[in-house]
Length: 291
Image (cartoon, rainbow, N blue to C red; front, side, top):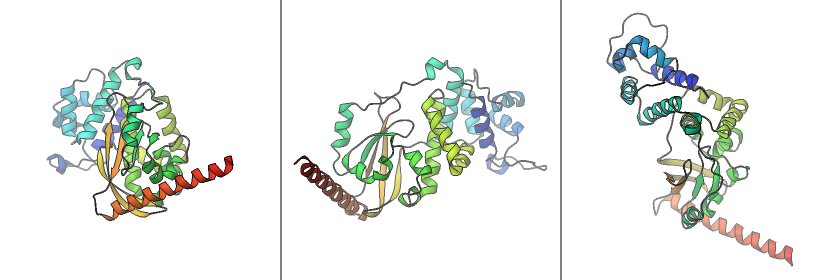
């Protein structure tokens, strides 16, 4: 797989976001396109115009880390964008066997024990395609609508399920972050066919996804605050943390929590009680059926 088109589009999109004033350059002459000129980026990065032109055409073969860092500084890339550029370069310089990542379809029992031990915090395990592979009871109660899908995928839910805009009151931000995270994963795993299939499906079926994908923005899921509107307990504002599993490349745990004594904490307790009542109701129904 040749990632030149991906590299070219990313560099052009970053160059187009910076004004000469932001880069500390004098603005002179009529500009036909927004952002910096190629010559200006080359000057800021300390490379020739010809060399930068080669890079922007998507050829990162043999580019050193120092040049990538200089380019990242010239384009004012943030940490996630800089890491994305380095990932694109690694993919461009690696053989397919080295960049292909093993598929993860099962969650280790020890990891399941960890998330199931978090009784008052929704927690789930996901892969690099945003498939939810395992979830503890409270997370199943929170993400019930998402888990109705097989496979359960948060990106597919966000863009293809009409309930998503209600479930996520800040849907635009959720959607933008989800697309940015997929963009990061594509750079890391350019030979992941299932990931490519997911992006192709969403691009075909969702105008919103296709527009956001074309922006070439990137996002890393680490921590933050996410708002929910649950159909049973209503509004919740939860803190989330995402932790990579070093022993399982491509898998991570996402944990939601709320500060004690806050309305969100009360909502989580109510959600837990509701989930327990649903489990009891299901158990009673099964007993009646067996009898």
